[in-house]
Image (cartoon, rainbow, N blue to C red; front, side, top):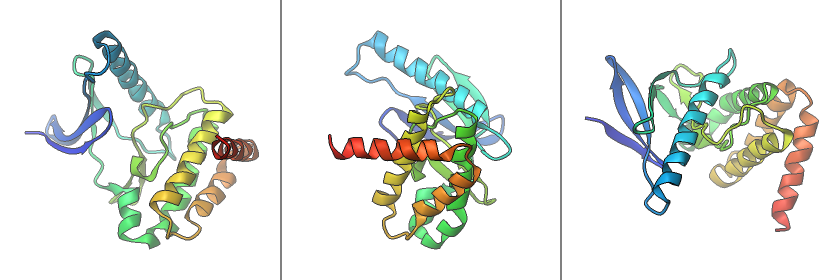
Length: 205
C-alpha cells in the first residue's frame, strides 16, 4: 500500500515500489474548479514537461531522480527514491549544514543555467540532500529547457526569497550560494542584473 509523504497544490507524492525497488510516485490529481478538458490538458502538459526536464537536467554536476515509469492515464511519474532529507529540513535541523550544501546549490544552479535550463520553483524544499552527501534537484514541472535570462533571474530570485523567509538565521547562506554560482556560471553578471531588476519590480508593484 502506498503511503503519502507530501500533498502539494497540484500533486500527491507517495512512497511506492517499482520492480522491487523503493520508489516515489508523483500523481497530478484532478482539480474540480477547472473544466475537465482544460484540467486534463494542464495535467498532461505538466507531467510531460517534468519528465523531459528531469531527464535533460541530469549531468555530472546535477543529480535528478531516475524515472522508472510514466503513466499518462493517471498523470503520474514513478521515480527513484532518494534516501535523505530536503535541504530545508536539513538546514532547519542543523544550520551548520549550510557551509557544505550552499556551494553545491550554487554550482548545480549554474550548471542548469549554463545549459539553458530553468527550474521554475527553486526553493530549498525542492532539493534533497542525500545520505550520500549528493544534492538532488526535484519538482521541475515549471521549468524550461530553453530558458532566457529572465527565467534564470526568477530562479535566483526565488532562491533568495526562500533563504530570506525559510532560513533567516543562516548568516550569509544565500551569499555563499551566489559566490558558487558566479564562480561556475558563464556571464553570471547578466543573470544577477536581471535578478535585481525582478526584485525592483516586485518592490514597486
